[in-house]
Length: 423
Image 1 (cartoon, rainbow, N blue to C red):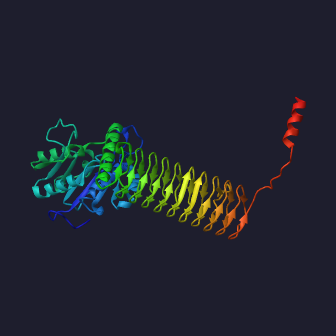
Image 2 (image 1 turned 90 degrees about the vertical axis):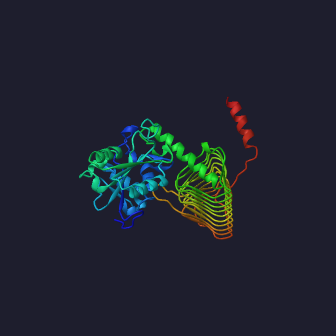
Image 3 (image 1 turned 90 degrees about the horizontal axis):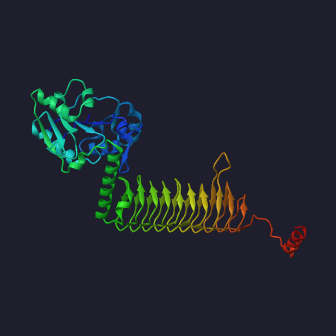
Protein backbone atom coordinates (compact mmCIF):
# COMPACT_ATOMS: atom_id res chain seq x y z
CA UNK A 1 0.00 0.00 0.00
CA UNK A 2 1.35 3.40 -0.96
CA UNK A 3 1.92 5.80 1.91
CA UNK A 4 1.79 8.89 -0.30
CA UNK A 5 -1.37 10.98 -0.25
CA UNK A 6 -2.56 14.10 -2.06
CA UNK A 7 -4.87 16.61 -0.35
CA UNK A 8 -4.71 15.03 3.08
CA UNK A 9 -2.94 12.28 4.91
CA UNK A 10 -5.62 9.69 4.05
CA UNK A 11 -4.68 6.73 1.88
CA UNK A 12 -6.72 5.98 -1.24
CA UNK A 13 -7.47 2.72 -3.01
CA UNK A 14 -9.11 2.57 -6.42
CA UNK A 15 -11.37 -0.41 -6.96
CA UNK A 16 -12.26 -1.07 -10.59
CA UNK A 17 -15.45 -3.11 -10.84
CA UNK A 18 -14.88 -5.54 -13.71
CA UNK A 19 -16.69 -8.72 -12.70
CA UNK A 20 -19.63 -8.28 -15.10
CA UNK A 21 -20.01 -10.79 -17.87
CA UNK A 22 -20.87 -9.74 -21.41
CA UNK A 23 -24.57 -10.57 -21.10
CA UNK A 24 -25.76 -7.02 -21.77
CA UNK A 25 -23.78 -7.12 -25.01
CA UNK A 26 -25.04 -10.62 -25.86
CA UNK A 27 -21.42 -11.71 -25.69
CA UNK A 28 -19.59 -14.61 -24.08
CA UNK A 29 -16.60 -12.34 -23.51
CA UNK A 30 -16.35 -10.50 -20.16
CA UNK A 31 -17.46 -6.88 -20.35
CA UNK A 32 -14.03 -5.60 -19.27
CA UNK A 33 -12.35 -7.17 -22.31
CA UNK A 34 -14.48 -5.44 -24.92
CA UNK A 35 -12.76 -2.57 -26.68
CA UNK A 36 -13.53 1.05 -27.44
CA UNK A 37 -11.12 3.39 -29.15
CA UNK A 38 -8.56 0.64 -29.56
CA UNK A 39 -8.21 -0.11 -25.86
CA UNK A 40 -10.05 -2.59 -23.63
CA UNK A 41 -12.61 -1.20 -21.20
CA UNK A 42 -10.38 -2.49 -18.41
CA UNK A 43 -7.47 -0.61 -19.97
CA UNK A 44 -9.44 2.64 -20.03
CA UNK A 45 -10.40 2.20 -16.39
CA UNK A 46 -6.80 1.52 -15.38
CA UNK A 47 -5.55 4.60 -17.25
CA UNK A 48 -8.11 6.74 -15.41
CA UNK A 49 -7.29 5.14 -12.05
CA UNK A 50 -3.58 5.75 -12.44
CA UNK A 51 -4.26 9.48 -12.69
CA UNK A 52 -5.23 9.53 -9.00
CA UNK A 53 -3.37 6.55 -7.49
CA UNK A 54 -0.25 4.47 -7.87
CA UNK A 55 -0.47 1.07 -9.51
CA UNK A 56 0.01 -0.71 -6.18
CA UNK A 57 -3.17 0.99 -4.91
CA UNK A 58 -5.34 0.04 -7.89
CA UNK A 59 -7.35 -3.17 -7.62
CA UNK A 60 -9.41 -4.68 -10.42
CA UNK A 61 -12.11 -6.99 -9.10
CA UNK A 62 -12.75 -9.30 -12.04
CA UNK A 63 -14.56 -12.29 -10.55
CA UNK A 64 -14.39 -15.32 -12.83
CA UNK A 65 -12.63 -13.23 -15.49
CA UNK A 66 -9.58 -12.65 -13.28
CA UNK A 67 -7.04 -14.44 -15.46
CA UNK A 68 -7.99 -12.96 -18.86
CA UNK A 69 -8.26 -9.47 -17.36
CA UNK A 70 -4.87 -9.92 -15.67
CA UNK A 71 -3.35 -10.81 -19.03
CA UNK A 72 -4.73 -7.64 -20.64
CA UNK A 73 -3.45 -5.23 -17.95
CA UNK A 74 -0.28 -7.10 -16.95
CA UNK A 75 2.05 -4.32 -18.09
CA UNK A 76 0.37 -1.71 -15.87
CA UNK A 77 1.34 -3.29 -12.54
CA UNK A 78 -2.15 -3.03 -11.03
CA UNK A 79 -3.62 -5.82 -8.94
CA UNK A 80 -6.29 -8.11 -10.40
CA UNK A 81 -8.32 -10.20 -7.96
CA UNK A 82 -11.51 -12.20 -7.92
CA UNK A 83 -12.81 -10.51 -4.78
CA UNK A 84 -12.93 -7.09 -3.12
CA UNK A 85 -10.43 -6.10 -0.44
CA UNK A 86 -9.89 -2.56 0.86
CA UNK A 87 -8.55 -3.22 4.35
CA UNK A 88 -5.88 -0.75 5.44
CA UNK A 89 -7.10 2.17 3.34
CA UNK A 90 -8.90 5.29 4.52
CA UNK A 91 -10.83 5.92 1.28
CA UNK A 92 -11.83 3.85 -1.72
CA UNK A 93 -12.78 5.11 -5.18
CA UNK A 94 -15.33 2.84 -6.86
CA UNK A 95 -14.86 2.92 -10.62
CA UNK A 96 -16.93 0.80 -13.04
CA UNK A 97 -14.96 -0.60 -15.95
CA UNK A 98 -17.49 0.49 -18.57
CA UNK A 99 -17.23 4.30 -18.44
CA UNK A 100 -14.27 4.79 -20.83
CA UNK A 101 -15.01 8.47 -21.52
CA UNK A 102 -14.25 9.41 -17.92
CA UNK A 103 -11.34 11.86 -17.80
CA UNK A 104 -8.47 12.07 -15.30
CA UNK A 105 -9.44 15.69 -14.61
CA UNK A 106 -12.89 14.68 -13.35
CA UNK A 107 -11.47 11.92 -11.15
CA UNK A 108 -8.88 14.27 -9.72
CA UNK A 109 -11.56 16.82 -8.90
CA UNK A 110 -13.75 14.11 -7.35
CA UNK A 111 -10.97 12.85 -5.06
CA UNK A 112 -10.00 16.39 -4.06
CA UNK A 113 -13.61 17.29 -3.26
CA UNK A 114 -14.01 14.20 -1.12
CA UNK A 115 -10.85 14.75 0.86
CA UNK A 116 -11.63 18.38 1.55
CA UNK A 117 -15.37 17.99 2.08
CA UNK A 118 -15.53 16.16 5.40
CA UNK A 119 -18.18 13.74 4.13
CA UNK A 120 -18.53 9.97 4.16
CA UNK A 121 -19.08 9.71 0.41
CA UNK A 122 -18.69 11.90 -2.66
CA UNK A 123 -20.39 10.95 -5.92
CA UNK A 124 -19.55 11.94 -9.48
CA UNK A 125 -22.73 12.67 -11.41
CA UNK A 126 -23.55 13.67 -14.94
CA UNK A 127 -26.28 16.03 -13.77
CA UNK A 128 -28.39 16.77 -10.72
CA UNK A 129 -31.37 16.05 -12.97
CA UNK A 130 -32.21 12.35 -12.64
CA UNK A 131 -33.71 12.41 -16.15
CA UNK A 132 -30.42 13.49 -17.73
CA UNK A 133 -29.45 11.67 -20.92
CA UNK A 134 -26.22 10.25 -19.49
CA UNK A 135 -25.85 8.37 -16.24
CA UNK A 136 -29.03 6.83 -14.97
CA UNK A 137 -27.34 6.87 -11.60
CA UNK A 138 -24.05 7.98 -10.11
CA UNK A 139 -21.88 4.88 -10.39
CA UNK A 140 -18.56 6.57 -9.60
CA UNK A 141 -17.84 7.66 -6.06
CA UNK A 142 -15.26 7.96 -3.27
CA UNK A 143 -16.12 6.51 0.13
CA UNK A 144 -14.70 6.51 3.61
CA UNK A 145 -13.88 2.85 4.15
CA UNK A 146 -14.99 3.07 7.79
CA UNK A 147 -18.47 4.14 6.66
CA UNK A 148 -18.99 1.22 4.28
CA UNK A 149 -20.84 -2.02 5.08
CA UNK A 150 -18.74 -4.59 6.87
CA UNK A 151 -18.52 -6.99 3.94
CA UNK A 152 -16.48 -5.83 0.93
CA UNK A 153 -18.78 -7.83 -1.38
CA UNK A 154 -21.36 -5.09 -0.91
CA UNK A 155 -19.15 -2.84 -2.99
CA UNK A 156 -19.64 -5.16 -5.94
CA UNK A 157 -23.32 -5.87 -5.50
CA UNK A 158 -24.46 -2.24 -5.27
CA UNK A 159 -23.68 0.87 -7.22
CA UNK A 160 -22.08 3.95 -5.76
CA UNK A 161 -25.41 5.74 -5.47
CA UNK A 162 -27.05 2.92 -3.50
CA UNK A 163 -24.08 2.75 -1.16
CA UNK A 164 -24.25 6.51 -0.62
CA UNK A 165 -27.97 6.27 0.16
CA UNK A 166 -27.29 3.59 2.76
CA UNK A 167 -24.60 5.75 4.30
CA UNK A 168 -26.98 8.71 4.39
CA UNK A 169 -29.59 6.63 6.20
CA UNK A 170 -27.06 5.94 8.95
CA UNK A 171 -26.76 9.67 9.55
CA UNK A 172 -23.58 10.31 7.57
CA UNK A 173 -23.47 12.93 4.83
CA UNK A 174 -22.44 12.70 1.20
CA UNK A 175 -21.75 15.21 -1.55
CA UNK A 176 -22.07 15.28 -5.32
CA UNK A 177 -19.60 16.59 -7.88
CA UNK A 178 -20.71 17.22 -11.45
CA UNK A 179 -18.58 15.91 -14.31
CA UNK A 180 -17.36 18.63 -16.66
CA UNK A 181 -19.14 16.86 -19.52
CA UNK A 182 -22.15 14.58 -18.89
CA UNK A 183 -20.86 12.24 -21.63
CA UNK A 184 -18.01 11.21 -19.33
CA UNK A 185 -20.40 8.94 -17.44
CA UNK A 186 -21.83 7.32 -20.55
CA UNK A 187 -21.90 3.61 -19.79
CA UNK A 188 -21.12 0.93 -22.37
CA UNK A 189 -23.99 -1.40 -21.51
CA UNK A 190 -24.90 -2.51 -25.04
CA UNK A 191 -23.17 -3.04 -28.35
CA UNK A 192 -24.85 0.10 -29.67
CA UNK A 193 -23.47 2.16 -26.78
CA UNK A 194 -20.04 0.57 -27.13
CA UNK A 195 -19.90 1.44 -30.84
CA UNK A 196 -21.06 5.00 -30.19
CA UNK A 197 -18.47 5.45 -27.44
CA UNK A 198 -15.80 4.04 -29.76
CA UNK A 199 -16.72 6.68 -32.35
CA UNK A 200 -16.50 9.40 -29.73
CA UNK A 201 -13.07 8.25 -28.52
CA UNK A 202 -11.71 8.04 -32.06
CA UNK A 203 -13.06 11.47 -32.95
CA UNK A 204 -11.31 12.89 -29.88
CA UNK A 205 -8.07 11.09 -30.80
CA UNK A 206 -8.13 12.48 -34.34
CA UNK A 207 -8.89 15.98 -33.04
CA UNK A 208 -5.97 15.80 -30.64
CA UNK A 209 -3.57 14.76 -33.42
CA UNK A 210 -4.84 17.51 -35.70
CA UNK A 211 -4.35 20.05 -32.93
CA UNK A 212 -0.78 18.77 -32.56
CA UNK A 213 0.01 19.42 -36.24
CA UNK A 214 -0.97 16.18 -37.99
CA UNK A 215 -3.03 16.58 -41.18
CA UNK A 216 -5.88 14.05 -41.27
CA UNK A 217 -8.18 14.29 -44.25
CA UNK A 218 -11.71 13.08 -43.55
CA UNK A 219 -10.87 12.10 -39.96
CA UNK A 220 -14.31 10.55 -39.49
CA UNK A 221 -13.24 7.77 -41.89
CA UNK A 222 -9.98 6.95 -40.08
CA UNK A 223 -9.50 4.44 -37.26
CA UNK A 224 -6.75 5.57 -34.89
CA UNK A 225 -6.19 3.71 -31.63
CA UNK A 226 -5.63 5.33 -28.25
CA UNK A 227 -1.92 4.46 -27.97
CA UNK A 228 -0.93 5.63 -31.47
CA UNK A 229 1.59 8.47 -31.74
CA UNK A 230 2.02 10.62 -34.86
CA UNK A 231 4.53 13.45 -35.23
CA UNK A 232 3.59 16.86 -36.69
CA UNK A 233 3.63 17.50 -40.45
CA UNK A 234 2.57 13.96 -41.26
CA UNK A 235 -0.38 13.50 -43.61
CA UNK A 236 -3.00 10.78 -43.16
CA UNK A 237 -5.46 10.28 -45.97
CA UNK A 238 -9.06 8.99 -45.65
CA UNK A 239 -9.81 5.40 -44.62
CA UNK A 240 -6.46 4.77 -42.93
CA UNK A 241 -6.23 2.55 -39.84
CA UNK A 242 -3.44 3.12 -37.31
CA UNK A 243 -3.70 0.45 -34.65
CA UNK A 244 -2.06 -0.75 -31.45
CA UNK A 245 1.20 0.92 -30.45
CA UNK A 246 2.03 2.35 -33.86
CA UNK A 247 4.50 5.26 -33.94
CA UNK A 248 4.76 7.52 -37.00
CA UNK A 249 7.49 10.10 -37.58
CA UNK A 250 7.31 13.55 -39.11
CA UNK A 251 6.68 14.44 -42.77
CA UNK A 252 5.42 10.95 -43.47
CA UNK A 253 2.51 10.42 -45.86
CA UNK A 254 0.10 7.51 -45.37
CA UNK A 255 -2.27 7.05 -48.25
CA UNK A 256 -5.81 5.70 -48.19
CA UNK A 257 -6.87 2.18 -47.23
CA UNK A 258 -3.64 1.26 -45.47
CA UNK A 259 -3.88 -0.75 -42.23
CA UNK A 260 -0.88 -0.34 -39.93
CA UNK A 261 -0.62 -2.15 -36.59
CA UNK A 262 2.13 -2.01 -33.95
CA UNK A 263 4.65 -0.51 -36.37
CA UNK A 264 7.35 2.11 -35.98
CA UNK A 265 7.52 4.32 -39.06
CA UNK A 266 10.30 6.87 -39.49
CA UNK A 267 10.38 10.35 -40.95
CA UNK A 268 9.57 11.12 -44.59
CA UNK A 269 8.17 7.66 -45.30
CA UNK A 270 5.62 7.22 -48.08
CA UNK A 271 3.04 4.47 -47.60
CA UNK A 272 1.02 4.11 -50.79
CA UNK A 273 -2.62 2.91 -50.86
CA UNK A 274 -3.76 -0.47 -49.66
CA UNK A 275 -0.75 -1.57 -47.59
CA UNK A 276 -1.11 -3.96 -44.65
CA UNK A 277 1.79 -3.56 -42.22
CA UNK A 278 2.15 -5.30 -38.86
CA UNK A 279 4.70 -5.31 -36.03
CA UNK A 280 7.57 -3.99 -38.14
CA UNK A 281 9.99 -1.07 -38.43
CA UNK A 282 10.21 1.18 -41.47
CA UNK A 283 13.13 3.59 -41.42
CA UNK A 284 13.21 7.13 -42.76
CA UNK A 285 12.76 7.85 -46.43
CA UNK A 286 11.40 4.41 -47.31
CA UNK A 287 8.72 4.03 -49.96
CA UNK A 288 6.17 1.28 -49.41
CA UNK A 289 3.37 0.04 -51.64
CA UNK A 290 0.89 0.06 -53.14
CA UNK A 291 -0.62 -3.16 -51.79
CA UNK A 292 2.46 -4.22 -49.85
CA UNK A 293 1.92 -6.86 -47.15
CA UNK A 294 4.43 -6.66 -44.32
CA UNK A 295 4.05 -9.44 -41.78
CA UNK A 296 5.56 -9.30 -38.28
CA UNK A 297 9.26 -8.99 -37.61
CA UNK A 298 10.42 -6.88 -40.55
CA UNK A 299 12.89 -4.02 -40.63
CA UNK A 300 12.90 -1.94 -43.80
CA UNK A 301 15.99 0.22 -44.13
CA UNK A 302 16.42 3.87 -44.97
CA UNK A 303 15.33 4.84 -48.51
CA UNK A 304 14.31 1.26 -49.32
CA UNK A 305 11.44 0.57 -51.68
CA UNK A 306 8.88 -2.21 -51.55
CA UNK A 307 6.44 -2.02 -54.42
CA UNK A 308 3.16 -3.46 -55.61
CA UNK A 309 2.16 -6.82 -54.14
CA UNK A 310 5.45 -7.42 -52.34
CA UNK A 311 5.15 -9.54 -49.19
CA UNK A 312 7.73 -9.72 -46.41
CA UNK A 313 7.98 -11.76 -43.21
CA UNK A 314 10.84 -11.54 -40.69
CA UNK A 315 12.86 -9.76 -43.35
CA UNK A 316 15.65 -7.25 -42.77
CA UNK A 317 16.25 -5.02 -45.77
CA UNK A 318 19.22 -2.67 -45.82
CA UNK A 319 19.45 0.91 -46.99
CA UNK A 320 18.26 1.51 -50.53
CA UNK A 321 17.07 -2.05 -51.20
CA UNK A 322 14.52 -2.21 -54.02
CA UNK A 323 11.88 -4.88 -54.49
CA UNK A 324 9.47 -3.30 -56.90
CA UNK A 325 6.96 -5.97 -57.85
CA UNK A 326 5.33 -9.23 -56.84
CA UNK A 327 8.08 -10.61 -54.61
CA UNK A 328 8.07 -12.69 -51.41
CA UNK A 329 10.91 -12.18 -48.95
CA UNK A 330 10.51 -14.42 -45.90
CA UNK A 331 13.17 -15.02 -43.22
CA UNK A 332 15.52 -13.01 -45.41
CA UNK A 333 18.37 -10.59 -44.82
CA UNK A 334 19.07 -8.32 -47.79
CA UNK A 335 22.13 -6.07 -47.89
CA UNK A 336 22.12 -2.39 -48.78
CA UNK A 337 21.67 -1.41 -52.40
CA UNK A 338 20.46 -4.80 -53.57
CA UNK A 339 17.85 -5.07 -56.32
CA UNK A 340 15.18 -7.76 -56.10
CA UNK A 341 13.46 -8.39 -59.43
CA UNK A 342 9.78 -8.99 -60.10
CA UNK A 343 8.47 -12.38 -59.00
CA UNK A 344 11.46 -13.31 -56.81
CA UNK A 345 10.64 -15.76 -54.02
CA UNK A 346 12.67 -16.90 -51.03
CA UNK A 347 11.57 -20.51 -50.49
CA UNK A 348 11.93 -20.41 -46.72
CA UNK A 349 9.72 -23.35 -45.67
CA UNK A 350 10.47 -27.00 -46.32
CA UNK A 351 7.19 -28.24 -44.88
CA UNK A 352 8.61 -28.66 -41.39
CA UNK A 353 11.08 -25.85 -40.64
CA UNK A 354 11.73 -22.27 -41.75
CA UNK A 355 15.17 -21.45 -43.20
CA UNK A 356 16.99 -18.15 -43.80
CA UNK A 357 18.18 -16.49 -46.98
CA UNK A 358 21.12 -14.07 -46.93
CA UNK A 359 21.69 -11.66 -49.81
CA UNK A 360 24.76 -9.46 -49.67
CA UNK A 361 25.10 -5.77 -50.45
CA UNK A 362 24.81 -4.59 -54.01
CA UNK A 363 23.53 -7.91 -55.35
CA UNK A 364 21.10 -8.25 -58.24
CA UNK A 365 18.47 -10.99 -58.23
CA UNK A 366 16.81 -11.31 -61.62
CA UNK A 367 13.07 -11.58 -62.13
CA UNK A 368 11.20 -14.80 -61.44
CA UNK A 369 14.07 -16.37 -59.50
CA UNK A 370 13.50 -18.76 -56.61
CA UNK A 371 16.03 -18.86 -53.79
CA UNK A 372 15.73 -22.18 -51.96
CA UNK A 373 16.74 -21.60 -48.34
CA UNK A 374 19.03 -22.01 -46.58
CA UNK A 375 21.09 -20.18 -49.16
CA UNK A 376 23.40 -17.17 -49.41
CA UNK A 377 23.96 -14.78 -52.30
CA UNK A 378 27.28 -12.98 -51.94
CA UNK A 379 27.79 -9.22 -52.16
CA UNK A 380 27.75 -7.90 -55.70
CA UNK A 381 26.58 -11.23 -57.15
CA UNK A 382 24.11 -11.56 -60.01
CA UNK A 383 21.35 -14.15 -60.28
CA UNK A 384 20.05 -14.61 -63.81
CA UNK A 385 16.32 -14.18 -64.37
CA UNK A 386 14.26 -17.34 -64.01
CA UNK A 387 16.90 -19.16 -61.94
CA UNK A 388 16.27 -21.70 -59.21
CA UNK A 389 19.16 -21.24 -56.77
CA UNK A 390 19.84 -24.13 -54.42
CA UNK A 391 23.54 -23.52 -53.59
CA UNK A 392 25.42 -20.53 -52.22
CA UNK A 393 26.56 -17.94 -54.76
CA UNK A 394 30.00 -16.36 -54.14
CA UNK A 395 30.53 -12.60 -54.11
CA UNK A 396 30.60 -10.95 -57.55
CA UNK A 397 29.64 -14.23 -59.27
CA UNK A 398 26.92 -14.87 -61.83
CA UNK A 399 24.52 -17.71 -61.01
CA UNK A 400 22.19 -19.18 -63.60
CA UNK A 401 19.98 -22.07 -62.58
CA UNK A 402 17.66 -22.75 -65.49
CA UNK A 403 17.33 -25.13 -68.45
CA UNK A 404 19.24 -24.26 -71.60
CA UNK A 405 17.03 -22.69 -74.25
CA UNK A 406 16.54 -24.90 -77.33
CA UNK A 407 15.15 -23.65 -80.65
CA UNK A 408 13.84 -26.07 -83.31
CA UNK A 409 13.26 -24.21 -86.54
CA UNK A 410 9.93 -24.97 -88.25
CA UNK A 411 8.67 -27.23 -85.47
CA UNK A 412 5.40 -25.33 -84.97
CA UNK A 413 4.53 -25.34 -88.69
CA UNK A 414 5.11 -29.12 -88.93
CA UNK A 415 2.90 -29.67 -85.88
CA UNK A 416 0.04 -27.64 -87.33
CA UNK A 417 0.24 -29.53 -90.65
CA UNK A 418 0.16 -32.88 -88.87
CA UNK A 419 -2.87 -31.96 -86.75
CA UNK A 420 -4.67 -30.63 -89.83
CA UNK A 421 -4.12 -33.93 -91.67
CA UNK A 422 -5.42 -35.91 -88.68
CA UNK A 423 -8.51 -33.78 -88.28
